[in-house]
Image (cartoon, rainbow, N blue to C red; front, side, top):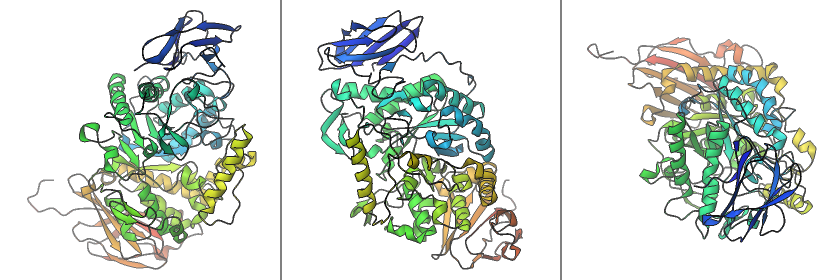
Length: 622
């Protein structure tokens, strides 16, 4: 694969390379300290390059295909003046890394935390996140997942309109700011994931067609023509995309990538772009000696996504589990059935916990066809589960979080089902203390026609949900500022209780051997009608046992505790005084110690967790 962009090697040396297979010539336009033009050499496969020995880091430059208009570098490492401005040379070796002993974290041990850099702090920068890391770590969070940071238009955007996939958003703090954040995270034992988008490029500032056939009309995506992974000249596009993960892993010490909507990537080649990425990243992983994680967002419900290429899969280490969210959310909020008509039965949540995919070949009214394949038996650490993410909040007309939709007791229930599940959990920024700020969709385009199209598109999306509420104007600055979380509330009233609740759940997940076992064969669920369920978990070897008693209903539910243990010890009870919003109601507490086979009465909207040890025969080894 060819290294493209401005590769600064030190002592003034820099190799400029750009792919433009159908162009006859390419000119490098340097702007610092004064303008000068240099004709680049044409090499094999349509790559133009030139090596110079008098370049300083920060030098601005453009490329001029066939001597025409100047355009930014498609593989720019930094756009200090925005997407329309010149690219800048970056000395990737200038940062003195302090994480030499960092070897990454096991994926199954992660507590992921998705955040949007622009709205996580008032400053909206990478460096402004650093003072909050200690509080996140104290809660038990050990992995940040940053929404896309590739250069996008203006200063406010979700990031999915990114154009320059190798460039770090200038308003967030650019390359230097990102490196400082990653270093600070690693110093605290926290991993850093990036959300990357390879299914489309943003519309504004997209000059890629001026260089080469990056797109194809063969396939169509929700954003227009698809990226060209399998048509004529696709090799250069594949190099551009497959080198990008290596860029983040090597230059920025990133620990993992979350790949946006992989089902909107079309590639009929013998070796798919995903297999190519898998192979190159695994080679790099061995060379660097640390874990590099690849996580997919997929709307396919196919186990092939997380199988290795050798087994006929795409090669991802894990994937987001939307079915878990849908199955749990609709049981917590009955109005959720308007959004997820195929969900709403307790058996579906049970299947989400034991199998993964709920839709595994069944007919769905949403798709009007049979959908999905079984994921039974696939270990829990191959899935990322969540109650909230940017889509679930931002694609509501009023930007409502889960805490706006369900009451306090059900919030505790939702957190417990997630954090005590066999899956790798992910929280959305502020969720750990029930932040009540909305999270809207916002943009900062400069093209008036594009702004109008975005506004009309949002109105049409919400019209599909029969919403009478006018959506927030994505372009208005207030839409962005309202989306900032209220960090200061995390230690106040009910927010403090929810924060401590999350901390306790994460502590249980870390300390209980049973909860570290991600084998699906060691999980069983007893459904209590449509009122609730009991999740049975056991340690590797089966000696330690744990049950989670979940009552989703507003009525009491009786349950006979299993009789094959020596005795039951209560680990957690959501009705204990410290977890109650409005004071003590000790009459609803379950016993601290319970006998095998004892019948207990589960309070309405409650979570209780018991641990026990299995009775072994007298002659059985211990």
